Image (tube, rainbow, N blue to C red; front, side, top):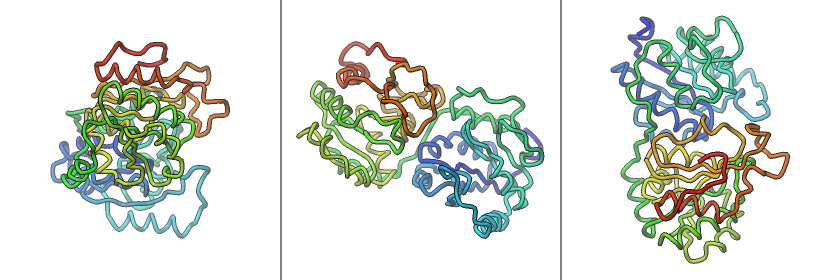
Amino acid sequence: MNGAWANLKNLLVMRLDNIGDVVMTAPVLRALKEALPGVRLTLMVSPAGANAVPLLPWVDDVIVWRAMWQQLGGGRCDPARELELIGLLRERRFDAAVLLTSFSQTPHPAALACLLAGIPLRLGEAKERAPGLLTHEPASPTPEAEHQVERNLRLLEAVGLPVRDRSLEVHIPQEARRQAAALLPGPSLLLNPFASCSARTYPPERAARAARLIAERAGLRVVVTGVAKDRERRQALLAELGELGVDLLGKTDLPTFAALIAEARLVLTNNTSALHLADAVRTPVLVTYSGTDYESQWRPRRTPALLLRRPTPCHPCYAFQCPFHLECLDIAPEEVAEAGLALLGQQSAASGFAVS
């Protein structure tokens, strides 16, 4: 272990992104607690990412901050607010900071804030050079198609911190499990049909039809989940499901959502946080996975899973809005249902997709 990192007492981990990204910090947080007994671990997250913190028992404290450099389109620079952040970090007197990013993001704005706050050790990975901002980074670049969890863990290994377990894990509070049990109508398929990114969203009415076909064949109810704003576009979807559907859109917090996933027989979702939670609790998951990203960066690694996508020349596009007609998700509901039944052991596996 790098001597500078061997005796840390007060450590900051930053992941200023969405819920799924914060869920995927779990292996790093767990490894840090195991490698550094007695360390106080503070996780700095965005307001959206803060919803995942109750699932991460390794966190001793949390800082919620909407960072200018993480906002889509670039945030407005308010010098007073940036000085407030630096002052907040300085007050905490951190020994080191671990700056977690995806391959397309830079850690340098966060590293600069930490440098100005007097944090002496700053660990991250960047494609571009900025001498003096990061004090430690991997000796070689992480391949672009590497899984996000592995990208995170490579940072720890770069400074000699051991990693015993590389799997995704969350801890669901007992109260959330009780709430989920009260909401469930019996054996269920969990349908999570919406996504914040339109380029990742399989047409919800098609998803509902696929879910209904699976549920009719497998003897399941369909629990529909999502955030409160999704309720505005639920009518056609619920009409498709009929009496098989259970409307829980906007009715759960994230721990209860995770508990529902843990109890489901199958999860049908887009490339959203539900994918990662299903992997963490080992529930089989069927993903209508658009061409925005490499599957290898985000796919489940420990639970039975099928990722469905039509091959397109624009993959991966990393777009938030598709400039074409979402050809990568032009999949008939019957084909999605066939794949879901395969995961449930009802019939042969699906074929004709880019990923399975």
